[in-house]
Image 1 (cartoon, one colour):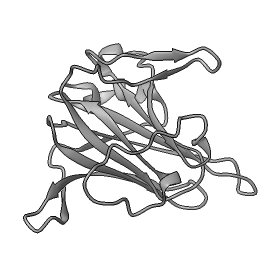
Image 2 (cartoon, helix red, strand yellow; image 1 turned 45 degrees about the vertical axis):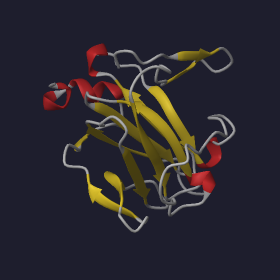
Image 3 (tube, rainbow, N blue to C red; image 1 turned 90 degrees about the horizontal axis):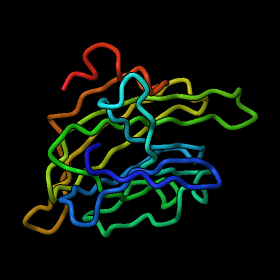
Image 4 (spheres, one colour; image 1 turned 90 degrees about the vertical axis):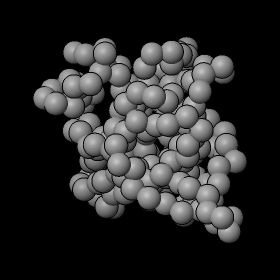
Length: 182
């Protein structure tokens, strides 16, 4: 993403997605329905044919590896416990491609389920990105909801009209077909 800074962690060679401190941003609440290893990564189609994933957050058993800072003070509450919820900043004004991958844990067969969603975040807006999968990690889905504070102080959700799905099992899939069209 233009302006995003990737910090490489020396021990694990993991690149992280960051928003520059002076850039406009939107807030996203990343929610998973599983305690298994789940990673939310940003992909940049401008890097095709090999878009390197930038880790936005990890949940479940990746809690220690992905950091414990999970709260931006967003309106409303997550429907999931803290180990399954992260709040992050994302760049605005251009399509954001987010791949979510989760792995089944033993004794289940080693399976992974990945799904992608893109949308155009607006400055100062809040979103909830909800990832769901079955216990075997054979079926999964992701959706983007826009969060809006109501006059009575409660928080409503509405489907984000700019969201589009894409195949995300491998980062290179973003480069195929219409998904990489801007």
